[in-house]
Length: 477
Image (cartoon, rainbow, N blue to C red):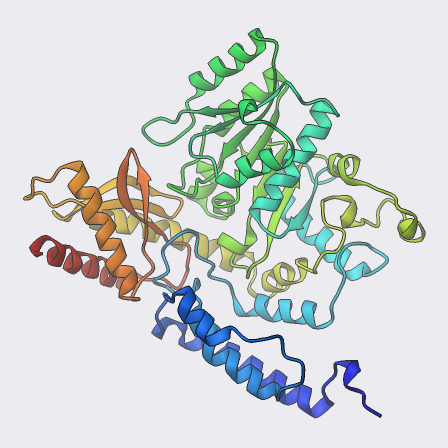
């Protein structure tokens, strides 16, 4: 009898297939530093490789795996490469990768206690570790693992709206700086706020929210019968790593009775280092805090996190009781995480965080984060001693922005913008490094995000040297 409908391989086939997958991953981990971090291909080139009608009949599984190994993996950027400096790299770690493999292999449903008590318990344990790390209330506080910072910010703002506005939020106003991450604006739009309900507060020369401008905006809105309700502060902006004046903003929120949300998706993990903890002073005063373990806590994608001062806020916002779940509600201590967020079906994200912390220990993570902050500061010193480079934004929480601006050349801002954009373009096209630009103070600058603990000064000096060589070529053309 044909049993192909069971979608299974034999035991020996599964073992052989699995060993080949693991061998491929291990080989990637031990050789990734020798590869190019950049993959470039056009849609036409990708179509030529992958476009085909949906397969009606089976193929040899090893041939499919070989095809993927040959064509998919090499055509993806290596975000864990030591010369991947752009956006926010994803350094990851092997133990967490294997934890994800276990969670996926066993197909564990991590929505409710009844489906997996252990999965729920490990999320509770991991969440309590993070609450303690960020000095949130350990007994009343709570949180949830999400797909990333975007979903964490969305969950936070839905919760804030429910707690402070109820069903009528037509006059509610949200405040954020001009350096706030775009996911916040997207979340605000998704949950039904209009553009007119967002106040973008200017930043100062260090890209921090200007407190006086914030106070003035709140006062104007109250005088016009509007309802200020939430301030979103940055704990490490994506552009510069800047931290807003958290303690001052916390005081404003307390006095004005506003919700205080901190977006620490990028910089929150800096709490592990002494310098980072000092820079993030006041983070514990947030009502809600977004962090992203798949960034600076070295976890694979997808893993964001939302912490709140009172777990009750999440339950009050998201609990629904459909008939098909009535038999598995459990008791109040047995948390159903689908009651704490948007997703009902949830993958077992806590396992990778838990296993990597248990394996390496928090001290190893502390050293990694501290190293990242220190190497960015070392890069700043290197650039400031050079006649070729101008530091535009100082090293802050492992991010530094700079541009090629030789002292002996009299170039306009427009010429410098064009030059630095072209330097980035040629570096990326060389596939040696992933180094792209951003815009600060209306200037095109090169931006390095140095959160990979395997990135060394040798890697960085090689990249800067390449930039200088490309710059000379461009100027000679």
